[in-house]
Length: 311
Image (cartoon, rainbow, N blue to C red; front, side, top):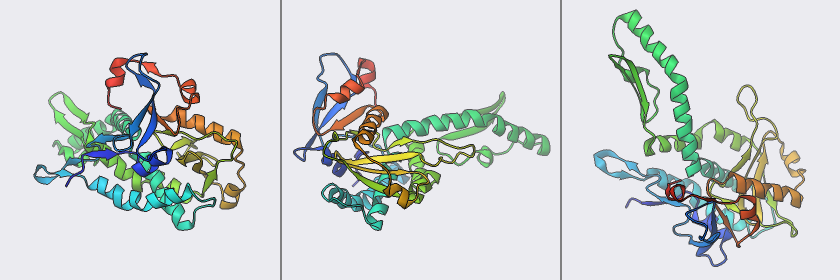
């Protein structure tokens, strides 16, 4: 049976911020009016989910949810018990646990509404920047052979991208839909960004008693990355994801395991991370309590039309 309601943040991760195991406090940075309460309790069954997010049309018009099944089998099922364990024990993850948590972090970086927006923006930029080169290819072939090439021979293998000759010249277009998003997700799970995650040494930060709880954003993976001229992440770039209010899984690109172990993590470090989580959230922020510092750090916008839009 095809799943219709797809969680882009797994329920087992959301559950770490739940007091009753069934619901979680949610702060929406967009409100329809000023009378709406700042916080609401949202069910884990429906929170951070979207109908048909990973479903696409398969052969014979059947719905294909193979990507969701891939998340279940390869990422979520192995990670659920590890995340639970990391929130209960006072130790660093084993090599195998670190590998499982890396898989989870990579998935959370590429599967969210924020990731979808990045994918669509990148596709549009690629099309706009690539039109001159693609046009030149078509003209060169026509001048050299006297024939118009089949569009498929010149178009990059990207779902939704179309390039075709017309009397006025060449028509280029791209469809921003589920096919393109899922293509982006699958590339992200195995591409160059994945290599950055795999090659880095990760550490579990256990918050000291005098540090405030970490929230969770609908963009769970937070980043502070600088790139060199070749497009590689510079040494010291920061990647992290909270595994619970008192646990942070993080790395600094290029640091050795010894250097990661010597990284200072005072309460001020976690306070800065908490602000990054709040600021980098796409729209919604989750917390174990109705934390007043979150709305203070990111006041909500009152906009009915924006509130109704799908993230």
